[in-house]
Amino acid sequence: MSTTDIEGVTDYELFIDGAFRASHGGDRIEVSFPYDGTVWATVPDATEEDVDDAVAAARAAFERDEWRDTKPSDRRVILNQIADTIDAHADELAELETLQNGKLLREMKEQLSGLGEWYRYYGRIAEEVESGRTIPVDKKDGQMFNYIRHEPFGVVGAITAWNSPLLLTAWKLAPALAAGNTFVHKPSEETPVSALRFVELIYEHTDLPDGVYNVVPGQGQTGAALTAHTDVDKLAFTGSTAVGRKVAKAAGENLTKVSLELGGKSPNVIFSDANLDDAVNGVMKGIFAATGQTCMAGSRVLVHEDVHEEFVSKLTERAGDIKMGDPRNMDTQMGPVAFRGQWETVHKYVQSGLEEGATLEIGGEMPADQPGECFIQPTVFVDVENDMTVAREEIFGPVASVISFSSLDEALEIANDTDFGLAAAIWTQDMDRANEFVETVEAGTVWVNEYRLIAPNSPFGGYKASGLGRENGREGLEEYYQTKSVWYNHAGEVGDPFVLE
Ligand code: NAD
Image 1 (cartoon, rainbow, N blue to C red):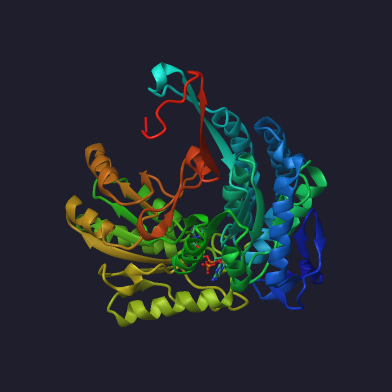
Image 2: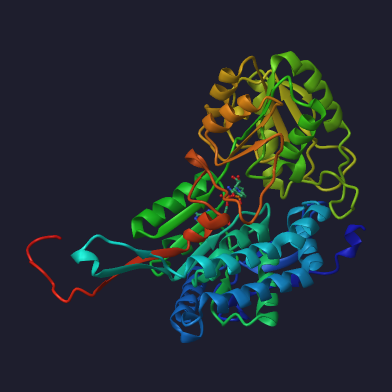
């Protein structure tokens, strides 16, 4: 395949109340293929008025009986239809994802082929948790009947990042719909097309009522309009910690419920008794997969001093062999980063590593044999101290910072000496040591002898500055409903009005 396969530029519109419609403003965002910079689509840069329209449509849909009266089993049927639609269009959606952000087509095909499971899973479990449980309250000689109702919040405002656009959307949309909310989505300005095609497909192939799912593409100011909107009941955000703080601030102002999935600086820790080839694979998965653009990137590689030299030599050799190229080719192992600004960010961090005294083992530059301006070589720094910028800040690129340690205590101290707490991994054959690591490390996800695995039914989210709340699993559904406690008096007498019984 070559870029000559991209024919023309497609113009998309906003998707509100079940149909495409024009923006109130005239500004548009160009979407390009980061492999070589070809512009292949444009979308509106939605205005505040557009956001108002989308929220109004979602509010009206929430109040209409057609959605309000749905039972969990009705919503399960719709979620299964969404899953079937994804299955039927997985290849097309995967290609759109790759054209937007340059991630490997084979990774995106795999991601899209499993994406329907998120919708099926939440359709299934919403039926179980919404049945409500009775509480044996010790009041009025057992004559009070108390039970729990789970009710949706109303309108959910969702804002997502560009690195796995439809996956990050599923983590919010599937539980939000399962719980009975309506939804306004602001996708990343770098990757708005898959969201617009996805919502179009859903309205072509499922019974989702108009206005339940709306998409308003735009830049940061569109997201800010959504987060500040007083008719949004719940905010769900995936992105950087810096923007997450702004979203939390806006949510605080309106007292809007909020969940945040933010950045990371995750430690991937290798002990001398580990199977070193497996551990190298795990480190490659952690930092070079997706060109390092994953929130859970294992960007701090902690290696025991006894195997440091051997490990670094193996890792450097493997990094040097990585096949870069067109992300649409099935044998490419690493594509470009998603856009030029991200390339500049990554390169700036490489410079800071050099300036602060880390040793560049391999990489750090733009390869001469690739097109465009978004490729960066797989990069390994050694002699990294945990207080260097490359060990403290999220780079979001293929840059491994290798730090040496001599004991479990020291490894844990370094692992936890970070503002973040998204993920962590340990490579060892000693399960007592693994257990101590699992219990002590401050991270929302911990892998033992693995890296970068997720599942619809396993909760995901951050400790510390990596986020608020959880996505996936039962915890992910709980983010989308509120709990009502209901009391029925069967005793027949109300009691002393001046005493709290
Ligand atoms: P970003 O924070 O720059 O942007 C995220 C989204 O927020 C975009 O849609 C953007 O338009 C919007 N936005 C920007 N300014 C805003 C504002 N003032 N108010 C509201 N919305 C605003 O992040 P990014 O560069 O798109 O994505 C990379 C980041 O996302 C990394 O930090 C990565 O770790 C994080 N991420 C986290 C997870 C997770 O599950 N924890 C998953 C993927 C990515």
